[in-house]
Length: 88
Image (cartoon, rainbow, N blue to C red; front, side):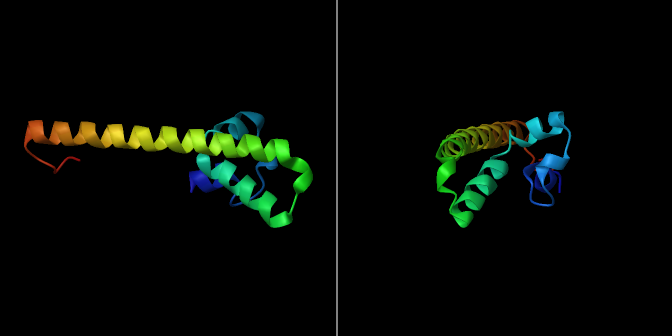
């Protein structure tokens, strides 16, 4: 729910305060939606913003995936050490 609000799925992010818009820019979903909306509206004159959103999407997706893999490996190591998957 929070991701959909910060990304602009539920309503336009221009209605949010500037500090919260900054948090929304840290989510890959925000950039994906901007790219999808540019493609859907055939906005050719906004190539610089489209390029920025594409690079940001690739970077944030890679960062999020890497963090997820790292945290999964750490949780597996901790569960092997404790001998139980009940807490994870």
